Image (cartoon, rainbow, N blue to C red):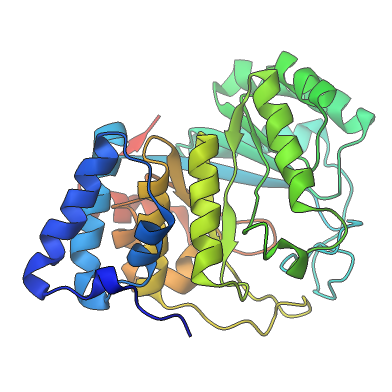
Length: 338
């Protein structure tokens, strides 16, 4: 059990001032420290509203009250050689999911049409597997320009490990951003995957940056890691100045090695979102998988630190109906960003 840091032993009267002082420093380009990150995660629930208000000050500076919507297409499912313990599509998973090769160009265009109809800013296309084949990259090379011309969407691909040459090919066809999550800290990474390393993932991010594309990289919370691992991930992504960070809260899917992981509580999840906002103030912060399950009725509060959500389903899990997302955004007095 983690002990509460000494810096948290303060009187209730000073909660507001402390978190707003931290927000002020972050707005003045202060880089969050590990001690400050732990203080955020291990703060008392009685401080939560003050913490969220401070994170909102930072979010509002760079993103106003806009909420960016993202639509995800699972364009290739299962059939993966990797052993990531959290994933229902991995080779070690016994989860009952659909398994299929790369969908047709027509299906990708249909997905883009749905993304546009749902007011999404970014169309995220994901394929399972360690790395894309040349044929798969060629397919994206043909279809991405068509999607951008027809729908004007920002294109983000999540296709596994990439070389600099591959990232350049994807940039040349019009891909705006590559998603490749670090998922957790370097220390904890071998406990969730052994078929590739944390360094392999960092090398892919380096290749993406070297090609001139934007980086989308985040993580999964609730896999059995310590608070220190969550803080390290947040600080690393902040140092990399990634343009977008999706924060997933583990859905312990039956048939995966992590199916027995503990359930998160919504107050802790909100503190996680505040941590990632303060660690990378100018980056888009997106609440990803697990939002509906782990935040539950507190979902609207998540949009005070975060400025983006997925609208629709995730890879192999269902999201709530888009109409509920629109109502939530409207009830907050926020607007959909395009």
